[in-house]
Image (cartoon, helix red, strand yellow):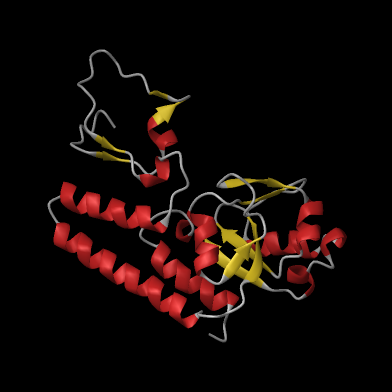
Length: 213
C-alpha cells in the first residue's frame, strides 16, 4: 500500500487498517500515512442502512460528486420503501441464518445490517438477542426457536448445497420447521454486509421470504 502511495485509503472494516487495536507500524523511512476513511461498518455501535446513506453522502462530498451521491441515495430509499410497501401488514416469518459451523451454528446476531436486512424483508431473526453481528449458537437453541426459514450465506469454499446437506442430514434438526419443510433462502455474503448492495438485497430476500408478495 505504501509503495502505491495512494492519496486516499478507504476501508470498510477497522480490522483491515489496524492490528490489535493499534495502527499498523510504519517503516521510519516511509512517508506519512495518507488520509483514511473509516466508514460506518467500523463504528462500535450497530450499523444501519441509515449509516449507509450517510456514508454515501460523505463520499460524494469527499470526491466532489454530491449530486451523484444524492441521486443514488434517493433511488436506494425508493427501492427499500417499495419493498416495505409490498410487505405491509404481512406476518414476519422467523429466520435462522446459517453461516457455518458443525459443533455450533455460526449465525447472524442482532447487531449490524444483517439483522436489519431480515427485518426490512419481512422476517424475524431468531437470534436477534445475540448481542453481536455474528456469533455462535447451540443447535439446541436452533431447535427450541423453531425457525420457519433458514438463510444460507453463499461464500467461501463450502458450497450452499453442502450447507443445506449439513442441516438436512442432522437427525436432531428434523422437526425444525425450516428443515422439515425445506424452506431456505440464499444470499451472497456481499449482499448482507453494509454496502451499496443492501437496498436491492432487501427486495431480493423479501422475494424469497414472501414470494406471494
